Image (cartoon, one colour):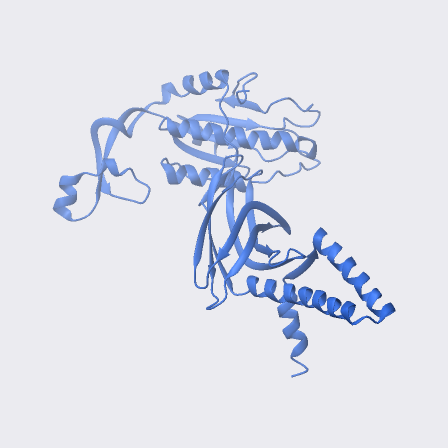
Amino acid sequence: MLRQSPSFFLRLFRHRSTNVTSEGLQFLFFTLAIGIAAINTGNNLFYLLLAMMLSLILTSGIVAEYCLRRLEFHRHLPDHLIVNEPNTVTLVVKNRKSRLPSFSLKMFDVSDGRELDRGLEIRQLLPGASRMMLYPLVALRRGRLQLDGVCIGTEFPFGLFKKQTFYPLEETVIVCPEIKPIDERLLRGLLNAGSEQSIHRRGHSNDLYNLRLYQAGDDSRKIHWPTTARTSQLTLRETEAEDQRRAIVYLPTVAPVSHDALFEQAVSLTASIILHLAQRGYMLQLLVGSSRSSFGQGDLHRLELLRMLALCERRSPLAESVVPVDVPGDPLEVEGRTMIVVQSWLGPGDIEPEHPAILINGAVIAGASHAV
C-alpha cells in the first residue's frame, strides 16, 4: 500500500493547480493575525474564530475538488481552417457525477502549453447533465494547429482560491493559407492566359459528355435520375465544355531566412490563385517544391491543394544554388496548359522585393499582387 501511494498522489495532482485570489490573500493574512492573537492572549473566542476560518479554507479546497472531478469533454472541429477566417467550434461538457453538481466552471483551450480564453463559463452543471457551447476559433498561421486539451477552473464556493485541472483532449486540424483578393493586373493576366489551349472536355455546357457513378463531393444537382432509377445506382451526368482550360501552379520553396515573410506571402498568393481558377472551372495541378498533385477539379481536389500549401515549408538554399526557377518534371508536360509560377526569391543578390514575382507562361506580371 505504501509503495502505491506515491503513484496515486501523482495521478491525483499532476494535472491540478491551486492559486490564491486577491480576496483569498486578504483572508489568509486575517487568519494569520487571528492565530497570532489567539496564541498571545489565550482567548478561547480567538481560537474558535481561528478554527472556523481554517475550516473555511479546508472546505473551499474540498468543494472545489469535487466540482472539477468526473467531467467529460468532447470537441468538434471543422475539417480544415483558413488563416484569419473565424470558424465555429463545438465543445460538449458532461457531468458524470451521480449526485453532486458542479458550479462556476470556466474553461480554456490549451495549445502549446498556453491557456487560450474563449469566454466559456458554466454557472451550474447538474449531475448527469450535458452542456453544449459554441465559440469562434481564428487561426493566425498556417500549418497544423494542435489542441492539447481543456483546462477547467473554479473559484467556488467562497472565491478564496482558484483551482484548476487539465483534461487531455488532443486534436489536430490543418490550417490553410489566407485567401485574399487578387490584384487587377494579375486577374487580367489569368483571364488572358491559356485561351489558345482550350480543349473539348467535361464541363458546364448542355451537351452530354459522359455518365458515371456518383462520388463523394460531386454536385447532387447533376444526378441523372432516369439512369439512377433504372440501375438503382446514383449516376452523374457530365456535360461537355468547349472552353475548359488547364493550369499548372508552381511554388518554389527555396528561399533564404531573410525572405521568410515574403515566402508566406507567396504561399497565400498561390492559394488565392488556385481558388480563383477553381471557381472558373480550371483543371488544376499544383507543384510545391519537389511535390506535385494530380490534375483535377472539384471541392475535394481544391481542398487537397490547399492542404499541400498549408503544410509546405521554406527550404534554405544550398551554397551552389543559383536561381530556384527549375520546374520539376519534363518541360513538355506543360505544353497546352497555362503555367503559373509564384516566386519569393530570385537567387543570390536578390534584394527583398515588396511582393512575390509572378510569371504566367514565362511572362512576368509586373507589380501584380494581392489587392490592398
